[in-house]
Length: 406
Image 1 (tube, rainbow, N blue to C red):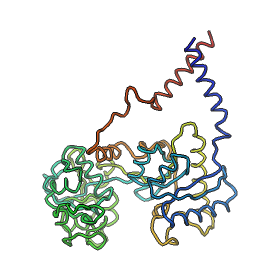
Image 2 (image 1 turned 90 degrees about the horizontal axis):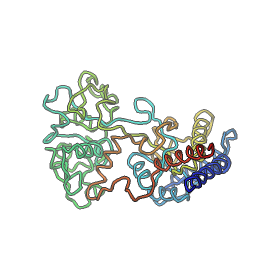
Image 3 (image 1 turned 180 degrees about the horizontal axis):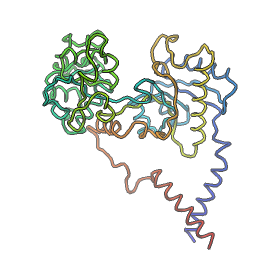
Image 4 (image 1 turned 90 degrees about the vertical axis):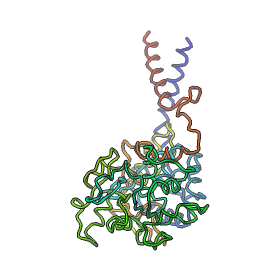
């Protein structure tokens, strides 16, 4: 009898909830969280442009709310004080882990990147045959800049996760200084990345300038890291998969396919066109994110439909407002990356973990775990996780139907 009552309660709850989904959870407003005055201005211009369009499938008003920083925006969304924010790379990881946010639409950069790019270890074809991803101890390396996702975070996380590189005081710069012979890591001595003035000097020994400042260093950025490799100041460059195609043949007569190779995670080498199977990680594009609340499926779907239609209208109609142009606001990448061509449906990658991808998330988990007590994802006496909850609901439905028939 107790089982019957519990199952009947579940069925009643589901029927009532589903009956209210379409009407009560279709959004009428999108509160966009902004962290700067420039973002607020662009958001307000976007809101005005949206109000001039009358053919939305799901009409809604965009309102702009202020957050102190990106993390504060995540918190405001989780507390239902805001609805949307555009996030990139590691911020997407934090949003999912700490605030239970999920992606609504993604940025599409077109060309060879689209909604993701791959981190690769690029070498010259004639490099020492003994050089592999597993023999980088004592190597000379080129990096676009300190803190860069493709050039620093992923390579260091990968090497640590694979137990090739050992932690030193939970500091990737101290760890790398003890592992590589020398490197070029522009900006490594800036206050942001070296607040204690302890980063090893050899992280600049492969640079053009001994102090390796960021933007004035010859080997700064992806073009700079590529040049560092081509000029043989380093043996391997950690860059995006597109870097070799973007810069080869401009200031040299090299050929991507003939003169370069990739170091693969399994210790082999492959041609540069094989980046999908020979990369350290796939990095997702930026995404507009909202809170994850199972009962508000129609709200999330409403935002997705609205944003995709808004983007299509603004790209195909004569409008003074451009979603992916930050020039009028005196900065770059305001609200969206300026390199974005369009917004796209996240499709089956509709959770933070799926959007990040297994390998990239594992690397970030590794970097975050240093110095912390890593807890098990599910405790035996903890709350019921969503998969277990829905398994019980489905089981309850079947049991209820069975009992009703009897």
